Amino acid sequence: MTKTRRMIAENIKLIDAVCEVIDARIPISSRNPDLNGMTGMKPRLIVLNRTDQADPNATKIWISRFIADGNTIIETDSKSGAGVGKFPAAVRSLLAERLAYYASRGQSGRKLRVMIVGIPNVGKSSLLNKLCKNYKAKVEDRPGVTLRKQWVSTDIGLDLLDMPGVLWPKFESAEVGLNLAFIGSIKDDILDSPENAAKLCGVLHKKYPADLSARFKLELSEVAGDYEIFEKIARNRGFIISGGEIDDERCAKTILTEFRGAKIGRVSLEEPE
Image (cartoon, rainbow, N blue to C red):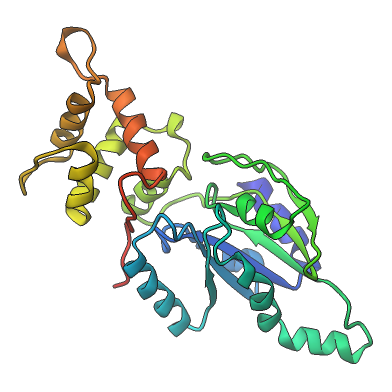
């Protein structure tokens, strides 16, 4: 985290604008609160990514809320490319005054420089791959794949500076930490995966009970506890080890993987107040 924070601070003077990529399923938890201090007053474009995995009704409300708060925002699915085509025009609109200044100095063909930032595993590399046809950033559904900064030139009038994903030292609430763990921004091998998966079951049971029940063929009461749901899923899927105990690691991996792949359904874990 310290290294990436230093890289952002050292390179911010080289760029015209900042693109902050966030996850549509957790639009608040996926925003690094330290980013304002690192990027100063640079104009910012927010990319609400992975909208294909989020509840479309919640996404509409979030878009309206961000716009009402004075933000420039576009929604994308960087895996399929939906919405990515809006990126160049959004950057030029955000930097209209800067472009006018360049034109007044006879530099109308000058490329704009945009820094791509965000927490780990929100799809920054996939976004870059869709924006840059001749560039292939390494993409995996786990945090920490991009380990260093890299400049990427495009044929759309933009030079993009891809920065490693960075979290902040202390989460303001346990809920934020859980949300980040659910989407895979925190590595599974440093957390208690069965406990996190059980808590995710509880959240989904509360917010999307029909989707959870349909995916795992559950019959759940209103008072079902988190671990009770988790155990029922394990037994329904046949994740049993010797002595009739459940294989909780295998069950946890299955639940988290299917949630992150939107196989449980299009769900949003956060709603605007």
